[in-house]
Image 1 (cartoon, rainbow, N blue to C red):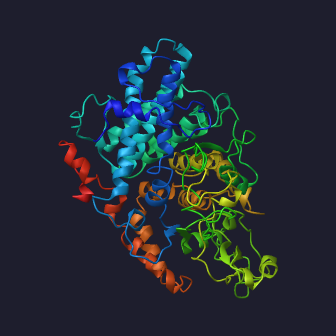
Image 2: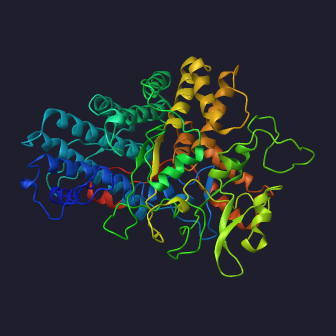
Image 3: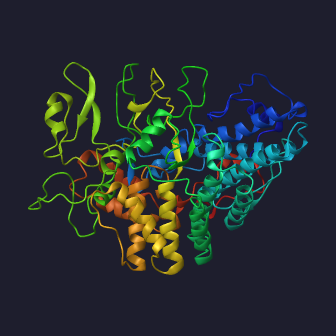
Length: 563
């Protein structure tokens, strides 16, 4: 394991964090022996632990785009040589893998040092000590969860690095790491504040409870296969999230994501429980921006300051996702906004589809202006209103459509930068918590309970117009419904790949994606996407431990999948 020297960590702790609650801008280097002189310096170190969430190597870009950006719902939409994490084609020397590993372990080492020193702060009162320690313990546990989920057996230590030679730590079994993760998170749950008692961006009880449910679902499934006891824990913690009725679904699905772009904190519904808090666009003093919306966004080639926001549109939808929105009842009847054969009845439209799968891209008109070009749904008035000059696309272009969840046109920080955005990334939403309740209850009881039905129907009612509430389902059919509903609700939020892995369905599902590229609806220019699906072998359930780390840590072993 490679960790920075303590002096480097302290220097990093003086960098400006990106969370909204940070109002201190430290300027100078401070030696470790002179640090933690007061409560403010302890807080500065804590904000550095938060700051790691927004780094380019984590939620600022690499993790959402490369590590979890491609699955059976979205693919890397570039007709280039298919290399990189998002194409399941890397080596043990991949730089993005290395940077993610380093970012997580640097964060952990900083937190280890913080927790070792915070009790010595002269003006630290007991309440603040408990609060800061709880937040730090949770963040350390969460970073270890990301490591175990991505790499499996990894070095585990809660002691800070004391010298540049203090680097030899063996792999700890994944099961043990995850057991330590839930232990620390459960300790932290009693230490942190309620969500309505701390500013946006701070770890709170709802965050801890929801992520605990996520970790226990992982422990229940592949490869640790903890089964029913872990599902019971997952159900318990998911139901604890809203025991005080602090969370509701926002009735406007789109507004959840507009708020992410506009930096709006929703205290009415509190559906967004935990976000990676980006700040600014690096055209001013703020250095906490990311690239959400620029990489995972709606393609726009206009980089001028008057643009709606430049975007590469790297991620587009697969037919798998498109068809999930258009076969909601499982009866083979589709609703894709226009007639299909002799079918003229429009069935239960899902408002999530045209938000999550963008119905337009930005295209140049005859005046060389970038304007919205819509795909031509039959009977859609936007087609006629916009006209051919704005680049209306055909109704049968499916896999050309970008992931539309993060739309730069709603950014409030102006002028917009070409690549850097202030759009927050959703780590945990209440809708996810409800679906975790539904899944765990079904597993524990070998069939859906009232709590399971209530949870999944609450999610479906919000987005599917006129849909009947589900009831009377057996274990297997309800389980499949939960899986599909997670796809429709949470696509492009980084949960799907690791859902498939814990269900032990990743390789088989990706094989279906590869087969589906033979469907005539996959246009010829997009068929290169078959490579990333075919590359999704057992090896790519894991990231490789970087060669550089193997050279530094003599006790570290490469994972079996990458030997």
